[in-house]
Length: 460
Image 1 (tube, rainbow, N blue to C red):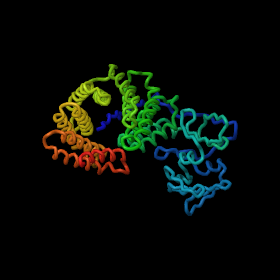
Image 2 (spheres, one colour):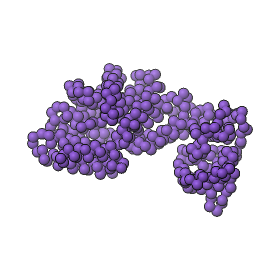
Image 3 (cartoon, rainbow, N blue to C red):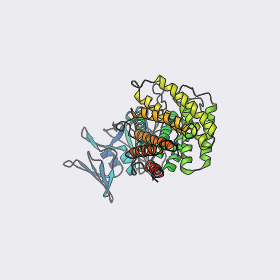
Image 4 (spheres, helix red, strand yellow):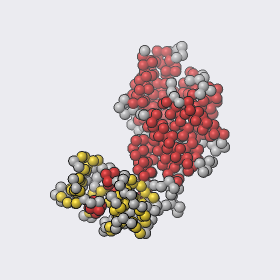
């Protein structure tokens, strides 16, 4: 029976205020072609940069016509054709339908299109930093370009540079990070990953190292969550890469909270990779990292991170066959969760209370695999049932499914005891079946396969 380590999905701190970076510029220069000034400057709509359609396409060499009846921009360049309809997410490029992230709009008589659409279809690179703001370059753009301007569009070879000045400042980056973090906490990893990737295209690690590390750590979290549902090996490796990138900047202060959270998440990713591949090197890497964390004096015994680290250390030791050391870590985690639960009021903070019960149940379930099976299985059952009073299928569908899966695991353990074997087998089947209502084969193939494998062992 495979067990999952607990991920530290704790939003790392970003500091805003006087030290925050702002997009700033004065003049634009290029040695290749002249600049084009436009009355209509780029704007931000729903936190996404939009640029005026007509001057941008004309600057790129397209001939533009406007169909006022159908509110459609039609463009032609040599043998290529482009149709953009205002309000529609679908554009037609060379008779091929292209999905736009956001539909074009008309504001004050001017048609705007998402800058990301222009980048995807006519360029190969979009990124932001405090010197260059938003840049789109084509793969045939070979000149050296210096950007420090305001409100202009420049054509450099076949590429396009769009400076959007204040609208796409660092505040917009923070807004985008907030949106991505919300998706992460809502267990929507694929959507969060796309958001984080877009943010990374628009920031510079050199200019904003802490923001870069925040994004890469949480992108690692998103990959770790996704690894539970599909492509475990690939997504675990992506998580390892993301956490490693984040640590490049956090390692400058090895006593910081951000450093230890990211380091712990890296250990989890190595453990998950070991589960997916069976490579002992990954398990060894996880063990070494947790040993480093345990030796530090960073962790406070009263914090959630300390309990998580004890549990995860126990899981690694259990996987290495070091049962005595695993039990010691599990009991430390158990005691910490019991203390934390006394400090949290269910009525005032139901989500945290349920999360602590969820994690306590995992600790007790893991203990039941090694010692005092019945006692620890009963304790896990009680904790999971408490968590389910808050984590309902309507509010927390994935946690609900996981809890029922874990309940099935508990009843399977209890079915191995002499008394009431048939009763516990039937209850395990019932719990696994309930979990499968959420973990469908199409959306969650890994979880679905694991649970069906457990069911087969019970039925046969």
